[in-house]
Image (cartoon, rainbow, N blue to C red):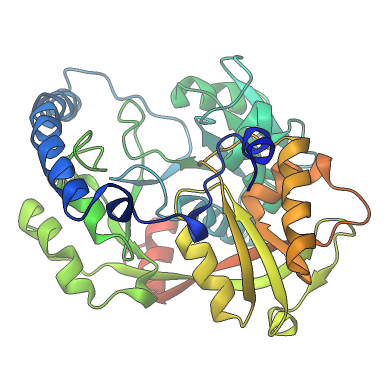
Length: 380
């Protein structure tokens, strides 16, 4: 890649061609530097851990107020930063409730959204009103996939919920990334753990990826182990959480399966089996790009090149031109990205693009009756 391409692409990381750091600076040096930096980071994690424990204790003891909305509230969240599969789970829950005649609202913070409005209506349940830049990646995708749901973004989920209720009748609110939003009472607290990322449970920020200590999992109504089809053993993976919480409940096991490929030019749908053997250039700006590549490879797609952007990347025309150029050089049959990325490049797509989005579905491998009972408030 020449210098002009690198400038055009900005945050792009060419992982497939990157040399290992140890090969550039000498064997063992990077490991020693990593070890040297680990201790200061762990020292910084101590006051952070004390602060989040104190905050949770204040809510638990009632010293900080926890307010209620006059409808059922289901929270979907995680202990780690990014990549557990919250968005497809939120979509699946919203679709399931809508199919049962429930009036559903989705409340999200709208991470990295451009709009500074304290409350923003992304969808009124009929029409998508805001694009991904102003709404945020995930809320826009949820609105796209769940056309019957009201979707709104704002930092204060209680005030946001009251604002939505003034405008629409709602039976259920689903909180996107709500586990740490303790100021709002929830009837169901679903905590997602990524089976493909056991290292994410090892240390608190900034030394690791944990937002809260493992003991915080005791607040959850249920643990949902996502990407459970790649786990060597759920019991081993969840052992540290069980030790920290003293709870031994069985997790609900979830996997994400390719459902279809969506043509971003025509809107047409193609069956997953039809792409087997085709060649592709892929690009994504998500927290877990490796899982996206693995899903495609498992469907028989031959990945010739892979462009990885930072999570929540704001795509430009220059980015898409570079992607097209790489696909042309490789002679790839198709360009494939995630649905989250696809909605962000939709306005940049031309009629000649061979751009497809991989649509996923959430499958419950174990614990479906328990999850449905929790959602409906019925003991199982």
